[in-house]
Length: 134
Image (cartoon, rainbow, N blue to C red; front, side, top):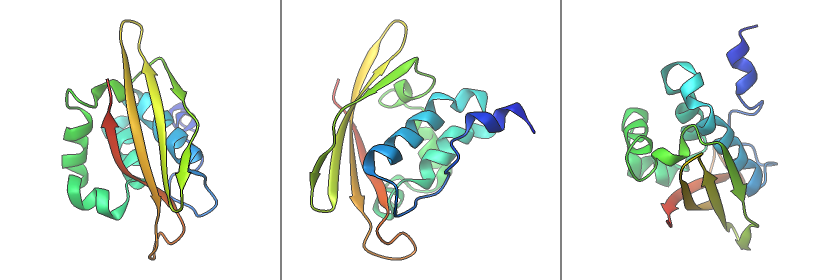
């Protein structure tokens, strides 16, 4: 077994039994370890949990990788630790505040998720958007 496989979460695809917090933690684990994985493997795994609407907006995976590596989102890569707030749930929409901590800087992001109504992701929580707060 290659040691890098130990860095990936066990779950790599949306599943109806995952809570919003679990989906965010899977994404955060993948992004935190992105630089340790070949070919932006962490960003690619995070893309798996982007909702169809999010994918439509961000475009194909190569464009998504560019967005995550931009000034607005690059703090999500290789951070030291993340503090995940409590979920705010309203029907099939969830919102969670995440504080990202690096050795010399911090950033706060709001993750917005929705439970998907259609196949192939029916009843799965997926990320609709990530907004940098500070």
